Length: 291
Ligand code: C2E
Ligand code: MG
Ligand code: MG
Ligand code: MG
Image: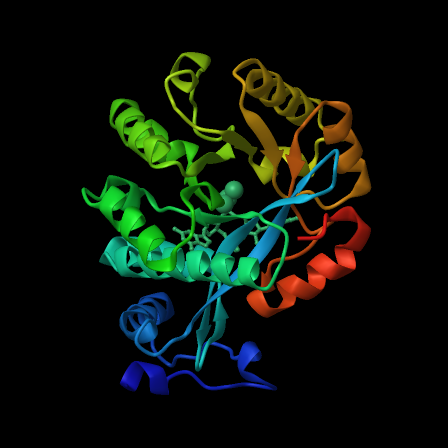
């Protein structure tokens, strides 16, 4: 309580709350506040799930909606996942939080289907801690059963670095997930040091090129080379390749010219609340097949 009392709203609105502490160690204070409130955030219903479309580069159809968690702290306003996911991992809270996102996303996809939206996958980011859980398979099977979502309409995004922490272990988990029928993407691809030799053992469907390579793909020849190499590697291994962080027409042309399969980024849409998705699909209009 005392920690919370040290936060004072300065200026307008809850999204503009500034951290203020008379004490020396502001970072430690902020961490403590975040940690105590993170423990209560699920019960207090402070998490939201936003969705960002993935688009087929040729047909322009939406293939999936990626679920991205948002935390609306009553005093701090929006806290970014970059800030609280690491804390959730350190405290173990990522397990219940991650399970909540999975269930929310699967329920949401079922609801979109019932509303008559075109069929698409919902993609959920898995933390390394979830990936290592012994009961991961049971949890996912349980949530699919509970929500009635078919496994092929769920996609899991697992980062390359998580997979590469223990490639042998990853091979066995990925095989089990594949047998379950869910779609699997390697997120932030290009940052995690896997080789062709590793890749051929991983039963995944998609490589997702990290946005750090996409950003300067038109002006930086190393980024361009890495991007085209990932696409070529994906193609030759029969994997789909998607680029994240696509913001400009120029980046899109580069990716299209180099046979990237799918794109995702602010050029198409920023992550949006679930209730904006139907409208977005309508507005996207002719580019999307009617459900
Ligand atoms: P990610 O899965 O690689 O997601 C991509 C991030 O890039 C998202 O940030 C997204 O909002 C942002 N982004 C999308 N399009 C663009 C663009 O065109 N330009 C730029 N500059 N950025 C773009 P966000 O939502 O802040 O999430 C950050 C990371 O937090 C995610 O990276 C993911 O690793 C993690 N995360 C988010 N939601 C969850 C979750 O439910 N569970 C877990 N375990 N991690 C999550
Ligand atoms: Mg992701
Ligand atoms: Mg990513
Ligand atoms: Mg990322």
